Image 1 (cartoon, rainbow, N blue to C red):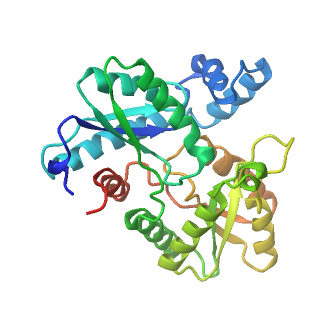
Image 2 (cartoon, rainbow, N blue to C red):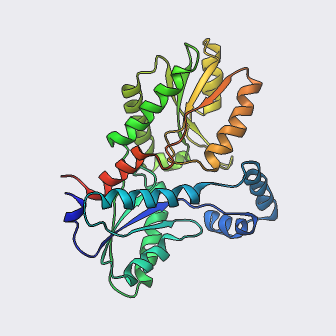
Length: 304
Protein backbone atom coordinates (compact mmCIF):
# COMPACT_ATOMS: atom_id res chain seq x y z
CA UNK A 1 0.00 0.00 0.00
CA UNK A 2 1.20 3.53 -0.73
CA UNK A 3 -0.09 6.87 0.49
CA UNK A 4 -1.82 7.43 -2.85
CA UNK A 5 -3.94 4.29 -2.29
CA UNK A 6 -5.31 5.42 1.07
CA UNK A 7 -9.04 5.95 0.62
CA UNK A 8 -10.38 9.46 0.33
CA UNK A 9 -11.53 10.79 3.68
CA UNK A 10 -8.67 9.11 5.56
CA UNK A 11 -6.57 11.03 8.09
CA UNK A 12 -3.77 10.25 10.51
CA UNK A 13 -3.68 11.02 14.23
CA UNK A 14 -0.35 10.96 16.06
CA UNK A 15 -0.90 10.58 19.80
CA UNK A 16 1.64 11.55 22.47
CA UNK A 17 1.49 11.40 26.25
CA UNK A 18 1.27 15.16 26.84
CA UNK A 19 3.09 17.58 29.12
CA UNK A 20 2.60 20.96 30.80
CA UNK A 21 4.05 23.95 28.97
CA UNK A 22 4.67 25.86 32.19
CA UNK A 23 3.73 26.17 35.87
CA UNK A 24 0.24 27.47 35.06
CA UNK A 25 -0.56 24.13 33.39
CA UNK A 26 0.65 21.88 36.20
CA UNK A 27 -2.48 21.61 38.42
CA UNK A 28 -4.73 20.74 35.47
CA UNK A 29 -2.18 18.43 33.88
CA UNK A 30 -1.55 16.49 37.09
CA UNK A 31 -5.29 16.23 37.74
CA UNK A 32 -5.71 14.53 34.35
CA UNK A 33 -2.80 12.15 35.00
CA UNK A 34 -3.78 11.06 38.53
CA UNK A 35 -7.55 11.40 38.16
CA UNK A 36 -8.18 13.92 40.93
CA UNK A 37 -6.96 17.39 41.96
CA UNK A 38 -3.32 17.25 43.06
CA UNK A 39 -2.14 18.39 46.46
CA UNK A 40 -0.14 21.63 46.64
CA UNK A 41 2.87 19.56 47.70
CA UNK A 42 2.63 17.41 44.57
CA UNK A 43 2.32 20.47 42.35
CA UNK A 44 5.37 22.01 44.02
CA UNK A 45 7.41 18.84 43.60
CA UNK A 46 6.62 18.53 39.90
CA UNK A 47 7.26 22.23 39.39
CA UNK A 48 10.71 21.65 40.87
CA UNK A 49 11.35 18.72 38.54
CA UNK A 50 10.17 20.48 35.40
CA UNK A 51 12.03 23.67 36.26
CA UNK A 52 15.23 21.67 36.71
CA UNK A 53 15.05 20.58 33.05
CA UNK A 54 13.79 23.88 31.65
CA UNK A 55 10.30 22.38 31.20
CA UNK A 56 9.47 19.63 28.76
CA UNK A 57 10.37 19.83 25.05
CA UNK A 58 7.75 17.17 24.30
CA UNK A 59 5.20 19.34 22.47
CA UNK A 60 7.87 20.97 20.31
CA UNK A 61 9.27 17.57 19.37
CA UNK A 62 5.97 15.89 18.51
CA UNK A 63 4.82 18.98 16.59
CA UNK A 64 7.97 18.67 14.45
CA UNK A 65 7.39 14.93 14.11
CA UNK A 66 3.85 15.54 12.84
CA UNK A 67 5.13 17.96 10.20
CA UNK A 68 7.89 15.59 9.11
CA UNK A 69 5.49 12.65 8.82
CA UNK A 70 3.07 14.73 6.73
CA UNK A 71 5.93 15.75 4.42
CA UNK A 72 7.16 12.15 4.17
CA UNK A 73 3.70 10.85 3.27
CA UNK A 74 3.36 13.59 0.65
CA UNK A 75 6.44 12.24 -1.14
CA UNK A 76 4.48 9.06 -1.93
CA UNK A 77 1.52 10.86 -3.47
CA UNK A 78 -1.60 12.63 -2.19
CA UNK A 79 -1.09 12.77 1.56
CA UNK A 80 -3.76 12.37 4.24
CA UNK A 81 -4.06 15.19 6.77
CA UNK A 82 -1.99 14.47 9.89
CA UNK A 83 -3.39 15.57 13.25
CA UNK A 84 -1.70 15.70 16.64
CA UNK A 85 -3.26 14.89 20.00
CA UNK A 86 -2.20 13.85 23.49
CA UNK A 87 -3.89 11.75 26.12
CA UNK A 88 -3.10 14.27 28.87
CA UNK A 89 -3.41 18.03 28.49
CA UNK A 90 -3.41 19.98 25.25
CA UNK A 91 -3.74 19.37 22.37
CA UNK A 92 -6.13 16.63 23.50
CA UNK A 93 -6.54 13.61 21.23
CA UNK A 94 -10.32 13.84 21.68
CA UNK A 95 -10.26 17.38 20.28
CA UNK A 96 -8.21 16.19 17.31
CA UNK A 97 -10.85 13.55 16.51
CA UNK A 98 -13.54 16.25 16.60
CA UNK A 99 -11.42 18.52 14.38
CA UNK A 100 -10.85 15.72 11.86
CA UNK A 101 -14.57 14.90 11.66
CA UNK A 102 -15.40 18.56 11.16
CA UNK A 103 -12.90 18.68 8.27
CA UNK A 104 -14.63 15.77 6.53
CA UNK A 105 -12.33 12.94 7.60
CA UNK A 106 -14.33 9.73 7.91
CA UNK A 107 -11.53 7.38 8.92
CA UNK A 108 -8.57 8.10 11.19
CA UNK A 109 -5.50 5.95 11.54
CA UNK A 110 -4.44 6.65 15.12
CA UNK A 111 -0.83 5.89 16.02
CA UNK A 112 0.39 6.16 19.63
CA UNK A 113 3.91 7.55 19.94
CA UNK A 114 4.84 4.52 21.98
CA UNK A 115 5.53 1.35 20.01
CA UNK A 116 4.46 -0.97 22.84
CA UNK A 117 0.97 -2.49 22.62
CA UNK A 118 0.24 -2.72 26.32
CA UNK A 119 -3.25 -2.16 27.77
CA UNK A 120 -1.55 -0.04 30.46
CA UNK A 121 -0.31 2.31 27.73
CA UNK A 122 -3.23 2.12 25.30
CA UNK A 123 -6.29 2.35 27.57
CA UNK A 124 -6.14 6.16 28.01
CA UNK A 125 -5.71 6.62 24.24
CA UNK A 126 -8.77 4.47 23.59
CA UNK A 127 -10.80 6.54 26.06
CA UNK A 128 -9.68 9.78 24.40
CA UNK A 129 -10.58 8.46 20.96
CA UNK A 130 -14.03 7.36 22.09
CA UNK A 131 -14.65 10.69 23.79
CA UNK A 132 -13.81 12.44 20.53
CA UNK A 133 -16.06 10.18 18.50
CA UNK A 134 -18.96 10.86 20.86
CA UNK A 135 -18.48 14.62 20.47
CA UNK A 136 -17.88 14.61 16.71
CA UNK A 137 -20.46 16.25 14.46
CA UNK A 138 -20.29 13.38 11.96
CA UNK A 139 -19.57 9.64 12.09
CA UNK A 140 -15.85 8.92 12.14
CA UNK A 141 -14.09 5.55 12.31
CA UNK A 142 -10.82 5.44 14.25
CA UNK A 143 -8.40 2.56 13.81
CA UNK A 144 -5.79 2.37 16.56
CA UNK A 145 -2.53 0.96 15.17
CA UNK A 146 -0.14 -0.05 17.91
CA UNK A 147 2.55 -2.62 18.51
CA UNK A 148 5.24 -1.37 16.12
CA UNK A 149 8.16 -2.22 18.42
CA UNK A 150 9.62 -4.70 15.90
CA UNK A 151 9.70 -2.18 13.03
CA UNK A 152 13.19 -2.35 11.48
CA UNK A 153 13.55 1.43 11.43
CA UNK A 154 12.82 1.55 15.18
CA UNK A 155 15.28 -1.24 15.97
CA UNK A 156 17.75 0.25 13.52
CA UNK A 157 17.70 3.66 15.17
CA UNK A 158 18.68 2.22 18.55
CA UNK A 159 21.26 -0.14 17.08
CA UNK A 160 22.99 2.64 15.14
CA UNK A 161 22.83 5.09 18.05
CA UNK A 162 24.34 2.55 20.44
CA UNK A 163 27.15 1.86 17.94
CA UNK A 164 27.93 5.58 17.66
CA UNK A 165 28.04 6.11 21.40
CA UNK A 166 30.09 3.00 22.15
CA UNK A 167 32.67 4.07 19.57
CA UNK A 168 33.61 7.06 21.72
CA UNK A 169 33.50 5.27 25.08
CA UNK A 170 36.08 3.01 26.74
CA UNK A 171 36.22 -0.71 26.02
CA UNK A 172 34.14 -2.61 28.53
CA UNK A 173 31.32 -0.07 28.62
CA UNK A 174 28.06 -1.86 29.40
CA UNK A 175 24.81 -0.91 27.64
CA UNK A 176 21.74 -0.71 29.89
CA UNK A 177 18.58 -0.98 27.79
CA UNK A 178 15.95 0.82 29.84
CA UNK A 179 12.13 0.78 29.76
CA UNK A 180 9.52 2.40 32.00
CA UNK A 181 8.49 0.20 34.90
CA UNK A 182 4.85 -0.46 35.74
CA UNK A 183 3.01 -1.79 38.77
CA UNK A 184 3.51 -5.53 39.05
CA UNK A 185 -0.26 -6.02 39.37
CA UNK A 186 -0.62 -5.23 35.65
CA UNK A 187 1.79 -8.02 34.76
CA UNK A 188 -0.03 -10.33 37.16
CA UNK A 189 -3.31 -9.46 35.41
CA UNK A 190 -1.86 -10.53 32.06
CA UNK A 191 -0.51 -7.30 30.57
CA UNK A 192 2.06 -8.39 27.93
CA UNK A 193 4.21 -5.28 28.48
CA UNK A 194 7.13 -7.09 30.20
CA UNK A 195 7.34 -9.62 27.37
CA UNK A 196 7.09 -6.89 24.72
CA UNK A 197 9.86 -4.71 26.14
CA UNK A 198 12.24 -7.57 26.88
CA UNK A 199 11.70 -8.88 23.34
CA UNK A 200 12.47 -5.40 21.98
CA UNK A 201 15.64 -5.20 24.08
CA UNK A 202 16.74 -8.58 22.75
CA UNK A 203 16.18 -7.42 19.16
CA UNK A 204 18.12 -4.20 19.69
CA UNK A 205 20.99 -6.08 21.31
CA UNK A 206 21.02 -8.64 18.49
CA UNK A 207 21.29 -5.82 15.96
CA UNK A 208 23.83 -3.72 17.87
CA UNK A 209 25.99 -6.59 19.24
CA UNK A 210 27.28 -4.69 22.28
CA UNK A 211 29.90 -6.80 24.11
CA UNK A 212 28.13 -6.17 27.42
CA UNK A 213 24.48 -5.31 27.92
CA UNK A 214 21.53 -5.79 30.24
CA UNK A 215 17.83 -4.99 30.47
CA UNK A 216 16.49 -2.66 33.15
CA UNK A 217 13.37 -0.82 34.25
CA UNK A 218 13.28 2.80 35.38
CA UNK A 219 10.97 5.52 36.71
CA UNK A 220 8.82 3.50 39.14
CA UNK A 221 5.93 5.50 40.52
CA UNK A 222 4.45 5.46 44.02
CA UNK A 223 6.11 3.23 46.59
CA UNK A 224 2.84 1.90 48.00
CA UNK A 225 2.91 -1.15 45.73
CA UNK A 226 5.54 -3.27 43.98
CA UNK A 227 6.78 -2.20 40.54
CA UNK A 228 8.59 -4.29 37.96
CA UNK A 229 12.29 -4.91 38.45
CA UNK A 230 15.26 -4.99 37.88
CA UNK A 231 15.65 -1.28 38.54
CA UNK A 232 18.35 0.55 36.63
CA UNK A 233 20.14 1.65 39.80
CA UNK A 234 20.50 -1.94 40.99
CA UNK A 235 21.92 -2.97 37.63
CA UNK A 236 24.38 -0.08 37.69
CA UNK A 237 25.83 -1.27 40.98
CA UNK A 238 25.85 -4.90 39.83
CA UNK A 239 27.81 -4.09 36.65
CA UNK A 240 30.23 -1.79 38.47
CA UNK A 241 30.98 -4.64 40.85
CA UNK A 242 31.65 -6.86 37.81
CA UNK A 243 34.32 -4.40 36.68
CA UNK A 244 32.29 -2.25 34.27
CA UNK A 245 32.14 1.26 35.75
CA UNK A 246 31.41 2.98 32.42
CA UNK A 247 27.74 2.52 31.52
CA UNK A 248 25.67 3.66 28.54
CA UNK A 249 21.92 4.00 29.12
CA UNK A 250 19.70 3.41 26.07
CA UNK A 251 16.12 4.39 27.07
CA UNK A 252 14.42 2.45 24.26
CA UNK A 253 11.18 2.40 26.24
CA UNK A 254 10.61 6.02 25.19
CA UNK A 255 10.43 7.83 21.86
CA UNK A 256 11.40 11.40 22.71
CA UNK A 257 12.90 13.54 25.46
CA UNK A 258 10.59 14.28 28.36
CA UNK A 259 10.56 14.15 32.15
CA UNK A 260 11.39 10.45 32.48
CA UNK A 261 14.52 10.94 30.39
CA UNK A 262 15.68 14.47 31.20
CA UNK A 263 14.92 14.29 34.92
CA UNK A 264 14.60 10.65 36.01
CA UNK A 265 17.69 9.60 34.06
CA UNK A 266 19.82 12.68 33.40
CA UNK A 267 19.31 14.11 36.90
CA UNK A 268 18.34 11.40 39.39
CA UNK A 269 20.09 8.37 37.89
CA UNK A 270 23.14 10.40 36.84
CA UNK A 271 23.48 11.70 40.42
CA UNK A 272 23.13 8.16 41.76
CA UNK A 273 25.78 6.94 39.31
CA UNK A 274 28.19 9.66 40.47
CA UNK A 275 27.78 8.60 44.09
CA UNK A 276 28.46 4.99 43.09
CA UNK A 277 31.59 5.76 41.02
CA UNK A 278 29.76 4.87 37.81
CA UNK A 279 30.37 6.78 34.58
CA UNK A 280 26.91 7.73 33.27
CA UNK A 281 26.35 8.12 29.52
CA UNK A 282 23.08 8.18 27.56
CA UNK A 283 22.07 7.42 23.99
CA UNK A 284 20.30 10.37 22.28
CA UNK A 285 16.55 9.91 21.93
CA UNK A 286 14.91 9.44 18.50
CA UNK A 287 12.80 12.61 18.93
CA UNK A 288 11.96 13.58 15.32
CA UNK A 289 14.75 11.58 13.66
CA UNK A 290 14.18 10.44 10.07
CA UNK A 291 14.35 6.78 11.14
CA UNK A 292 11.39 7.33 13.42
CA UNK A 293 9.52 9.13 10.65
CA UNK A 294 10.08 6.10 8.41
CA UNK A 295 8.81 3.77 11.13
CA UNK A 296 5.64 5.84 11.53
CA UNK A 297 5.15 5.90 7.76
CA UNK A 298 5.24 2.10 7.79
CA UNK A 299 2.62 2.01 10.54
CA UNK A 300 0.32 4.41 8.73
CA UNK A 301 0.53 2.65 5.38
CA UNK A 302 0.29 -0.85 6.81
CA UNK A 303 1.59 -4.06 5.25
CA UNK A 304 1.86 -4.42 1.54
